[in-house]
Image (cartoon, rainbow, N blue to C red; front, side, top):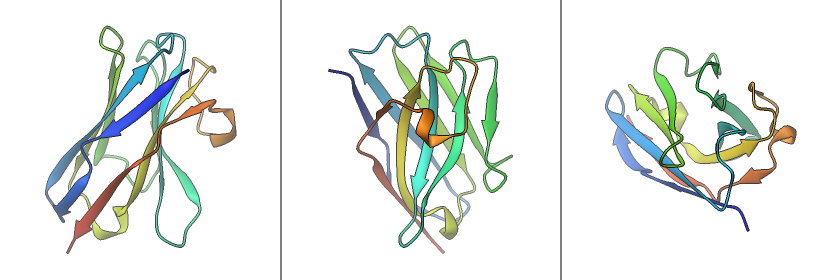
Length: 124
């Protein structure tokens, strides 16, 4: 059974930095686009970022562009989200997910596998 496990969440001050990681187990990691989504309290789940399977394509939500960077290490089956200068509005549960659309996709319904999420809280 495929398993995605996020880590690295926690409490961070606005303007600081935080790096989330996602470990993929029992997944043929390479052909999958890996994405990050988040759900803030009282809000719908939203796309944050993705990286295509060879790392050539990335995309970001406008709200995080130029502050967050996603990357992957296919040799280690790892996905990362570097969060620089987070703001209180970035407070949410962050999920990693895997999609068979290898060139990249922002649509949550195209992602087959999901982690359980890691809480990120940004204090002002």
